[in-house]
Amino acid sequence: MWGRSLSQSIIPLKKVGSDRVCGVKVSLSNKNFIFSVYLPPVNSKLANFAKVLGKIEEIVIRFSLKGTTITAILVGDIHAHLGEHGGSRGWGFNTENGQLLSNFMTRQLLLAADITTKCNGPVYTFRSHSGQSQVDHLLLPAILKK
Image 1: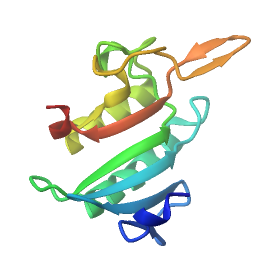
Image 2: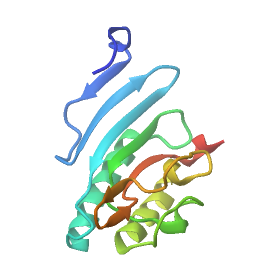
Image 3: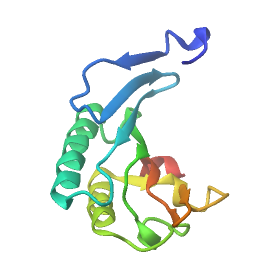
Image 4: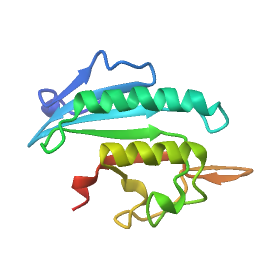
């Protein structure tokens, strides 16, 4: 999955704590944990979304040390519209899933990097014959915004 020269710096995490999350530890100049996440789709019950997001929050807390260079980065199918609440490039409106995600991001000091002015290109991440949406996100520690 990555070049042989990085094999000593990238270590797959075997037991993360959820079947909806997989991760790697990346040790270059600092330690980062990168997690690919898949939350329940927008049309599922809000309680299911909240339960999985709660599990992801436990994982972020376990693998992050606030105030240090050890960080957790989340990327994937988060299935939440943040609207403009998440950043100036936010698409659509803030859904119930988006509000739960926004509260989680506030608690964990994360930002949706994909909807900040540092990014360009399309603001939607999914397009079908019936429309488009922005439910895939890259969540970074807010401290990295600088």
